[in-house]
Image 1 (cartoon, rainbow over the protein chains, first blue to last red):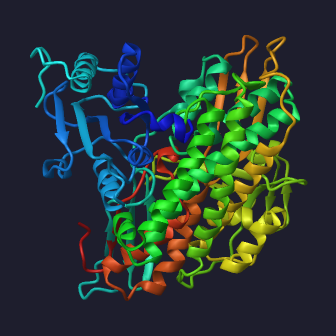
Image 2: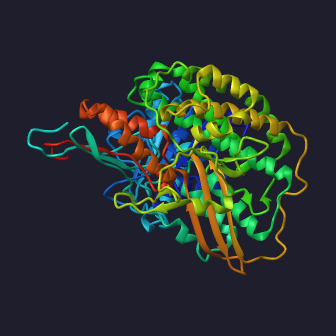
Image 3: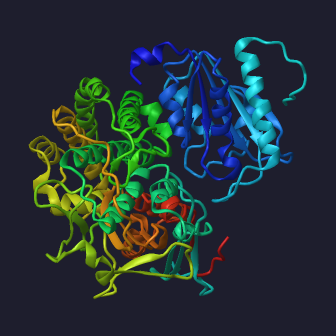
Length: 163
Length: 441
């Protein structure tokens, strides 16, 4: 994609993940949003959170979707960056830069867009060969709907709860 | 040091940082001598070789690309070429150029990430990439722009940047559009200038004076700097046909690691793969510009210091930009995306290529229906693991007087020189040090 094409997207949604079980949550959310075909956004899947840095400068608003550890599988979180709670939160990446590290680096380099929203789904299965858990499958649909509502400014009907 | 109560001194680095994946380093001293140096890969093995058995050979490239998010092309290309050798498929020169081009994209992306965010902080006195970004924001931004260019090229040729899907037995599933590559040429001209500046920036670095008498191993090709094909060359002058790889190199199980380690069959000794080995063995096949910059920043075939691998990587980034530009400017274009298989043949085939981190070897056996009967995958990090432990055993007596924390930092820096990807061999890094008289944590 060249710069001219990229410039038309002011909102970017990045799904972070790997193919392994619930770690693919971010990718599935992006896929779900792509199938709806109605969002004026750039949709991106990424494996390493450091790739977030490629999409910061060209966006006015960045939505990031990822799996996270937690006690209640399927629970959806919405955080507005910057937020202290995120620093202590455990993300699923095994590489040196997790999502929060990549956002700090983006901030340090003045690359962050005007607004950054981080969405997390609490998940349980991360081993190679695992399939998506049922709780994640349901949460993916809910999260896609929530993001659509937020971007298209549709009032929340209360059916998909977030923290 | 020897402790007053005679107990061994143990140093543990519980999580090695700024490496791909997770692992640990356990060190035990008796006096000044390291009696135990274990690079410990503790993640469970991922059984990719077993997953492949019984699957159609067309699935192999897609599955093996998922072993690593940093170097999926290395896995795909090596797998596809091994399977093509079984099926008697020989791709056209034009397809070969496009494959070399996508491999250049992966070298750029992987090397630039390691240089700027994982390894450079070690030599600029920074504890992390965050600190480096504070000190050198423009240089880190330049690195990110270089990485993005690698990503863009990978996306055009691989179908997508993450888990590329386009490499197929016989060629590509879909050829890129000529104009997509043409549009990248001016960007890559700028990229070459940035890559050259980045290499010069690294020339300011000061490196520890560690050296060792390595046995370097890399592919070598009569006509070009070997990337996607060639025969195996060893720094002692031995030339090994790729088909004889397993007669000369063997994997062994060690109790402290879930990843296999590789040794020379003849000597049982360790060996060194990766950018420094390639620079050693194939220096003359770099472009004139890359050789000039190499000479300017102080890296040449006499180098025996693994810390200087960061310079070798920087030179390979310059080379990869030049090579990519050369290929993108060629007007010859494949007449077809891929050769269709006429008849499926049973048999066994191998391939070796140069992943960003070094030599990667695959062997497959296919039955008469095209299903995989056997798969063997030897990634570069497995091959370097024994060499890393050997280096640490040589380094440790020279730094034994330091505080444990500084020893851990020095060891991590040496380990990071190899750019280990534990995701491939399984994952990485924690350092634990034991000295006489102290209990390990």
